[in-house]
Image (cartoon, rainbow, N blue to C red):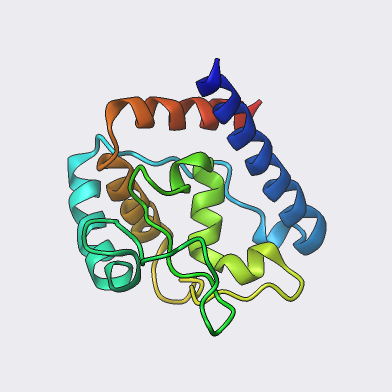
Length: 158
């Protein structure tokens, strides 16, 4: 029962983010609903590891462990980079939200005065490279977490 609650909450948060994006920014920054992570595509995952190592690991960690105290704002007022392993919240978001957060950056996605140290990668990585890096991240999760993430994706599509 607890797992269903977590999944429902994740889907609700994802839906709220999607609504906020469309409402605040309009269709030009709407997450691509066709964005689908492919953690079983070995070629894509291999490319994703290279992209992750070159663009993400310096903040999110070589082992996806994130920065220390990632839930607490630092002296600069910014949140440290969260982990992308199972201990973080990455898997709580549908593919489309993860793709949009990576492409446009959290500051653009959250809107208002929200500030984040993470840039958007729209001008750095192709859409395929973004999907590859996210597919690599998902490939590192346990089967249980991957299945739960798949359920979040299903709920987000309804």
